[in-house]
Length: 271
Image (tube, rainbow, N blue to C red; front, side, top):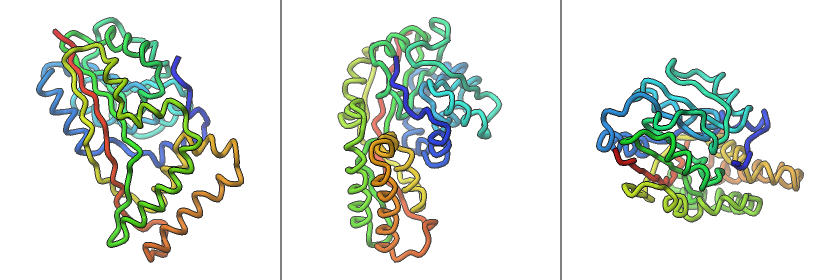
């Protein structure tokens, strides 16, 4: 069974507010791959581990029906409450027990979630539900993020990574998949026609408040809060104060750029 994270209602609300959707570079790569490998597969896309729906929406333009699934009832409630195109729906289920018929899914996608799954069981489901000629797209953003603002980008990134390093002490063992650029997940994908791209970069417009909120939404921060609440409560305000002082900015709403590297696994099931 998948690891259950992001279960609390408050955490799900923070996740919805501060987690970012796949950026243009990643979306363009996935859509180009679909056009190349499966131009006629346009009926059903499934986004597994969809959370509150950040990665689900862009699939609605290409597919007649898009279903986002997640093991967390709280996350699905947030996804359903958010505005979305009429051809998107959401349901609660484990990644390892997808309620779709054999060979019925044109695209099975997962964005920054697959490291929480039981990889072997999930891959069995990928093989089962994907139609012949269909595609799979599994991606994650990595932890080597950076902040960019005027001439102090290097210092801002250092401050951010010091806080991130503190949180990583509380990360789940499954984060190893992210640290290894999804290598094991790629090797487990049961299709010969597959590739892994590790150098996709997105420059995401954000604010200082958004950077702080992103770290608050991260699973290690939630563990940190449970283990050492006093230290956790001071970490993010302290980081925010240092960021604003370095930027010479008075407001946490000051915009900056959040640079993210993505890893993406793409696969095609033989027709």
